[in-house]
Image 1: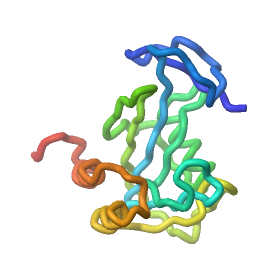
Image 2: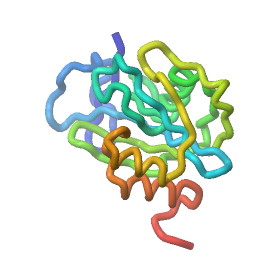
Image 3: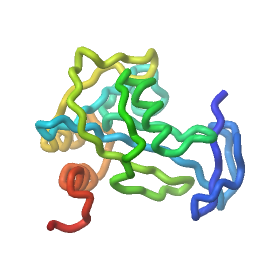
Image 4: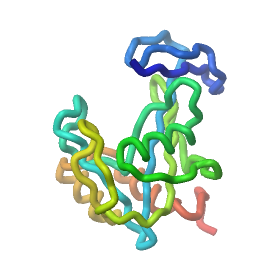
Length: 172
């Protein structure tokens, strides 16, 4: 069984080692992360979720997403998830989230990193990912429009592509 920490609205840990998947009270929040891995050509690594996944089976998604486990920081979770699900090692010690979404029950930190990865070197974990590909912004938007990609707001995809290097909400 996996365990998570629960936080208050300021991200102070309020409950440690809470069983993942169990319902928790209002006013407490969990933490998740997403990774958008780009290559030097400006394409994002996208993953096709495994057919056995409960949510969005066989649908394409961002490079990676996962929960922050008890005792982990979001950077720790990114490093662990990327290695566990795709067999890719990356040092996140100097990475900060590109953006954070506050959803009803938690915080979702989006990290954008650049790393050239040969798709032949990607290792799939049973039950998580069944395929990967490099995709341009336009290709991802087409997949969203066709219902073959998780239904992210197109403006989010555009924002991630636009700001992945500058880390600013405005053009310099």
